[in-house]
Length: 134
Image 1 (cartoon, rainbow, N blue to C red):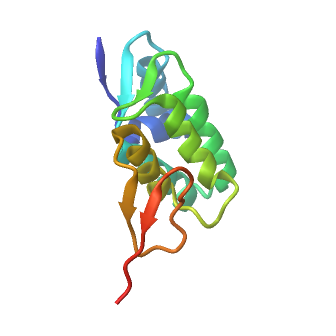
Image 2 (cartoon, one colour):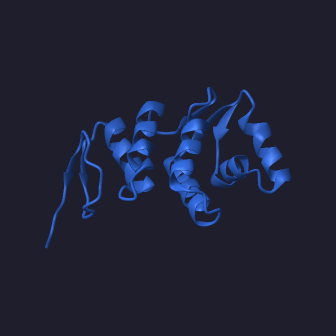
């Protein structure tokens, strides 16, 4: 069987809080089912872990990477390798947002290597970022 994971499932799995929900999440994530994570869920999970649980950015990124390295878990619209590379762009940087890193990954995986952004912090490794100013 295969399916998509939502934010609540991943947050409960990674935090162990509350225990009954964490156990239910583990039954799914630790199964042999093929599980896929949409980009928005990766970004939202990072946000919840940092803002609500006060988990340091590096630990959040490391946890997400470990989850994506499981044999049965994959990003929905991009390769695991590129998604992990994107997360690493923002791991040690207070500069690159997780959402921006995932847009960067989408540019790589889609073959559309041009991103329009007004954000001066948008990662540009291997893509063209076009910044329009008034």
